[in-house]
Length: 471
Image 1: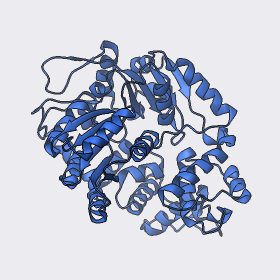
Image 2 (image 1 turned 180 degrees about the vertical axis):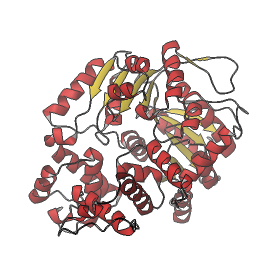
Image 3 (image 1 turned 180 degrees about the horizontal axis):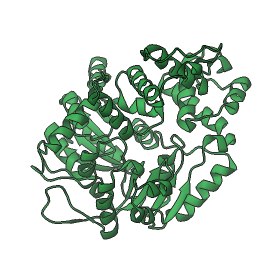
């Protein structure tokens, strides 16, 4: 656990740091926001940033977001100052820590950050077998390729492997290859020197250097551009990287774990994934089974999420009723554990009795997809020359007759994007396609003169950085 304290160590904030060190954390200190940003760039981020509430918390959060430095910010202030706490949370801090610190509160904060979204809950023999195989190879230095559908918990398994490895004392650094535009991904992986491109205002180390001595997770590696795959292969083979704008290579020592929700041999056959990189990564192959293949895990996972979200929302824990559990166990779970988590979170908020009843379970499925398709078709203009499709009672899909697949796909994509208020990532998840595929489709529609919903603020920042990098 790496903690960066922003502020003076001479008072109560320093006391909080000493308590964290006693609990096993590694501590760094910055005097102000500018110094904190410089250290975060140089060290590849941190696990927690604890900042004095009297400093510019909002400015720090904005700068970290703009530079894609993802770690929780905890504001710290003297006493239970409600106004300061509310101001810090509104500024973007995840938590407010009253000072002087209580050891139990510090321990709880560290445990919460360390365990967040990384719990490995399982009971089913199929999942136990997958974990047993992962633990067999965890102590090795071999690269591991983890396959599985979206939402099965591939990153959770990767973190478990890291904890069981000889590198557990080193950092675990994760990079989602699908979430970053192609022309920014190289800088994210290998870092850059000051002035390497327009907007590179300072040296920044990449994920390879940040993970040195530990584990680097390349999440959804099948989304990486083929040209960048060649540079990645060299970095893995030579154990050295070249920063953008750098004068000489930098030695790195990382263990690679890669994940993919696609069948990489098929991607190799299509020419979208390098065969030599596939063999380099696929020293050990693991597969995380879908939730449909491990039904015995549904009950313990549902209970875990029910407790988690009751605590997060300040609500009493309510157990699941037998009818609710039976409903969960009969569902198809196309979204796997992620879909189950969202379902339970929603049920926790909607429940009012002593137990979570079946009525609180709002389960999606193929019917939703058909309804969305029907809505897109109803909203789209028809080609006058084409006769109207006959109407069949109870079957909205019949309205598709007479339209091309391309037209239906276009309308569904644009309607889904509008439904998501322009959020590309959410729309791609709902549609079941990669963010790169979505971006390419939207570019086609825009070039054809169609109106495409504008991106949200986070997408705009990524686009702005892309334009500056390619300038």
